[in-house]
Amino acid sequence: MRRRSGLGALPGVTRALLMANVAVFVAGLVPSFESLIFENGALFSSLTLSGESYRLFTSAFMHGSPMHLLFNMYALYILGPGLELRVGSAPFASLYVGSALAGGTLFVLMNGGVAVGASGAIFGLFGAYLVIAYERRNTPIGNAQLRSIVAILGLNAAIGFIVPNVAWEGHLGGFLAGVVIAAIWSWRKQTPRDMVLTGVIVAIAAIIGVIV
Image (tube, rainbow, N blue to C red; front, side, top):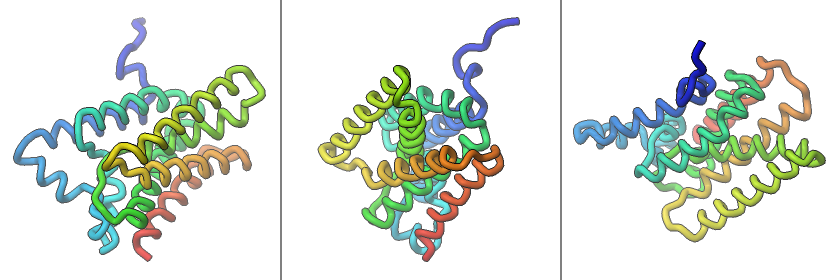
């Protein structure tokens, strides 16, 4: 038997998310698809509030530049496998989607502009990791992880306020969703089905936030 490497070694949901994000970006490089994808998938706040709530989801698979895609996919590559293996594929998927939608909702409600990117989902993973690391803060590994995550979050918070056109509202919304979901998982030991339901409830709440 040969050991799998590269994408083949990644857990299923993490691998699928990576491939989907890259595929959408590559499709957007085709001139005939670029405007079609952007106009129908990007998070236009006015359109989202007018009933096109699906944009909370579609915009999370779109990126504005190669660096934007690279940063988010690298973070997913680093954070995704460990989280997915720890909580299970279905709960991980619900965490990712719930965080993405929550990030999009906060952006729409606070910013009112246009955004694309998986950053809300990625910051949701950071939020979940923060909760897990905090639970293990009295162990050497947990303490080191907690310090690293806090440092990374602090750096990203600074970048969000210094660099123009960074949708920090989406980052914050996704992060808070990730913290809430992981905290509920931790506070009340749940079955995988219950864990998925927690993520789904957060996702539904995010959608309601742009409908009401």
